Amino acid sequence: MMEHAFVEMINIHRGIIYKVCNLYGLDQEDKNDLFQEVVLQLWKAFPSFRQESKPSTWMYRIALNTAITNFRKTSRRPESRGISTDEFQIPDLGAYPEEDEQMSLLKRAIDCLTEIEKAIILLHLEDKTYDEISDVIGISKSNVGVRITRIKIKLEKIIKSDRYELR
Image (tube, rainbow, N blue to C red; front, side, top):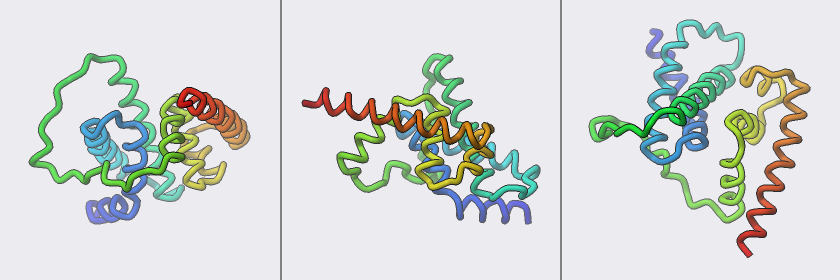
């Protein structure tokens, strides 16, 4: 029964995991590894999910915390050799239609943000409320507004400098 509920929740909200993996994964192999790690952490935490928040909010919290923790671990350790994924059924996280130039520019700018800034802007772009962002990130609602404003200004500067360099 618990396994069925977990699989159903993952299937309904798997887009959350894909978005987080695409945001924090460096290459396809890294995205696949992160996908597996996020699902593992969700499974470990599932028995303690008390449904006091929406499943999507809870999944964002686990996925983003896993991605940020994973990012910090991998930036401290030497590169390791991956395991072949031939025997696993992992979805192709890179199978998205070609991004137009503006989206590509925005994605490059977001890549320049810190891990926390990436998480906040991802949730903001997903039309999450300040309350939901506050729940996921663990900061006050008023701090969410301040950070979003600062992130937008930072992104604007990055994009302007990127466009200037392209000329």
